[in-house]
Length: 625
Image (tube, rainbow, N blue to C red; front, side, top):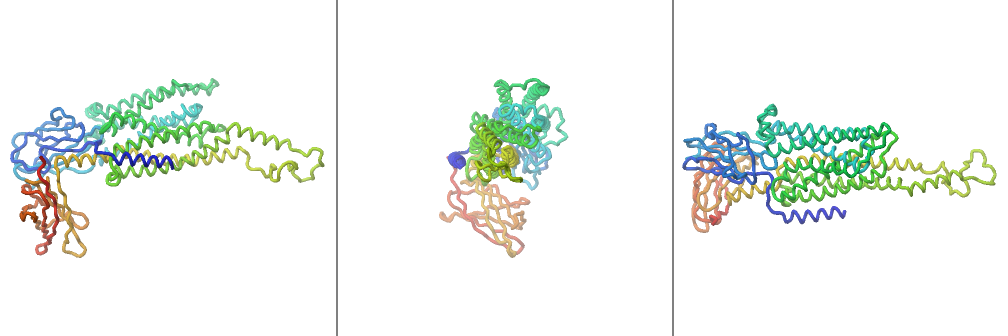
């Protein structure tokens, strides 16, 4: 309870004072701006992001109203700025609405995409159609996510099993379950890394699974930050394979009669360096590599990964040894005690680094409930608390087992056993037939062999069974935590969502979005009309209006009118002159002369004879100086 209270206090301190930052990249501005109407054609289109991005030849496309591409050359960084993307447009461009579709890769290795429109001369009735949806909602994206789960699992098994052998019980390196676990961990991590490297190109460019074997695309992927990290991971795994094979041979010689190998400080140091280097390949290409405090976030991410591997992989190793250990050779109580202490420290590191990462990625209490990252993090925290509760029972069974196996406890059992064996009735008549000879007068009633508790070995077995059950539950919950952690690494951090909103506000300061309900004219059917007023300042504004049905679908109405009145100053009503844009209503030249509170009168005609007028207010801000 003390630990939980401290964690809650630290979370309150950190999250309560968190400010805005970035991690996943987001579009912060564009030239031309989204929805703008230009009098003359632009020479190029420039996108600005909240952090540095990389892109391929097809990352930025500008499509004409006829759905023809009008940027003949690929995108480049504008003026050498890594957070920009610019394309030049071809010659004479006809009037109408143009669509800009983009897909770039943020500094943390995740692709992001989007689209916006601008018009030349006047908006056209036709516009290019761009596929929407999440960048990960593709066959390659889903497969890439599964492989990331496998890679994290392989790291946990490899690091956890190796740590158990090096720190807790060196003899375990000669057992078949541990060797199989090390092999499974290495194979899973190596195979998933190779597959991730092959899929990196299609993942970034939204290509097909079959394009994974395109050598040109693979060559480009290797030169990126994420591809380089995957290549480095493969090199480290090759070194790990050589070292594991060498030590396996030494254990094999020990089985043939040679003395068991000694795992000294040098071997532990090499293992620790290799584990750290493997974890760095994740931190270098994930959320820690972008945003605030990168210099601190990188080592924290490495510690978090290693602590996860030591705890979860060690738990699985201990569970296999408790269930399928070599016949006649149980896990020594001293090894279990060492792992218990090690696991406690690993969980403490997990909690500490997790608190920092939560503060860095979430940023506010509100984001815990309003963003996907925050909601997933809440679920992870709940499971971690459950893990800590189960782990407390594991430590209790471990303490009982260690106490049972302690030298002092063994000495007490030996003395008790000897006293029972020599108990006899010296000089007394022979006991009648059928009477227990061990019920000597000097022995308390009920302490004879026929009424004694189970032998000490049975008590140890009971403790081991209890520990095995608790370790099983803890390992299962640990796998759940690992799955949630992998989901978090692929989810846009809450800070990034807040950063994009802040950036959009900086560019489009004061954009107003109003949702006004109205009666659709049928029983129990109430629709809504959404009015977007940008930039929401004095001067020229763009107005867009969308009508929704009661179930949230788009509604087509014969007519939609909007007027604005400044009642305090007696200005208006000003007619916005909305025009039907085939799905929504818009006006691009509404001029508001004064700041203050304006009243919107919205008239929606639902049929040829039915209409309804609703009112709402909006505050118009002055032009910033």
